[in-house]
Length: 194
Image 1 (spheres, rainbow, N blue to C red):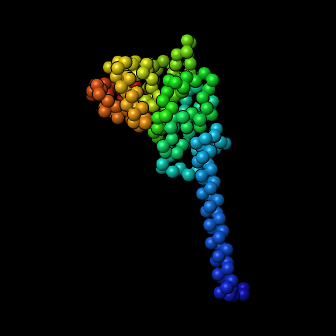
Image 2 (cartoon, helix red, strand yellow; image 1 turned 180 degrees about the vertical axis):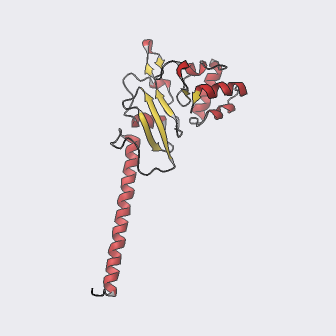
Image 3 (cartoon, rainbow, N blue to C red; image 1 turned 90 degrees about the horizontal axis):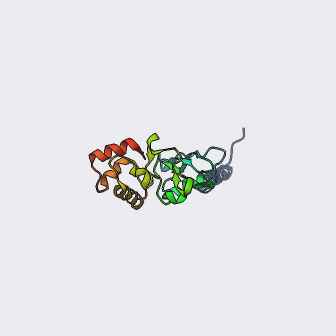
């Protein structure tokens, strides 16, 4: 094998660096497009999970009156509206006025888009209030009012607190709401999920 001259080594080195830079730029651009697509388009073939797996992403379960319910990974700082859009958008029967679409998403949160019931009332997609935990991120005043120790005034206070703080990541944050004591917190833990 013939020896390479110093000039040839420099040229080959420059070509290698250029290829690495072009490759890195292509990978970065592909990742950026995927993140944008995840926030603004319907579900891709990979079921909504990006390969980046960054710790700053949130994973949410979108259920109820949406086109494609499921579990989706979204960039940190995303809103309920982004999750609904990611799940294919709200269905024709969705009662969007019953949820706070501007609330920030928390990792592990379930977003339930209620459907319009008879007479235009919102009906939770998971059935009646006694069947399971209520999603803290989307609970209506009426749903909160069904919890032991919560009346309509405290339910309104919880919704206002959630809206002011851009959503809630855990039930424990509700101890900051006036009128919620230790006994009420136990009822909330039993009936709510983040």
